[in-house]
Amino acid sequence: MANYVQNTRKYEKWVKEGRGQGRNEDYKPWLHVREVPSHGLSVRMPSLKAGRVLQLFSLNEFSQRS
Image 1 (cartoon, helix red, strand yellow):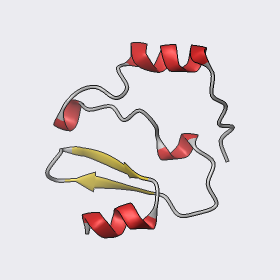
Image 2 (tube, one colour):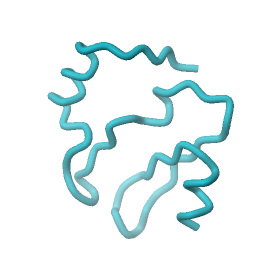
Image 3 (tube, helix red, strand yellow):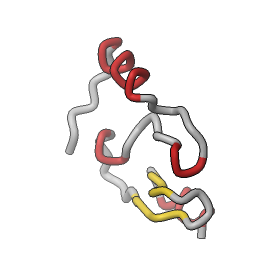
């Protein structure tokens, strides 16, 4: 499980990486499922419409996409 600590340096780094920006296949998500600790089920699945891998943090998101 990843160590999820919130701090300003991390956010500044993510902004420089372009997270949370872009469209369709160029979009970079703000969070990745591997970076957030969870006891639940997370899913990474390809999206034919967006042309990238979707990062779904719960089964609720997965069931809405299916």
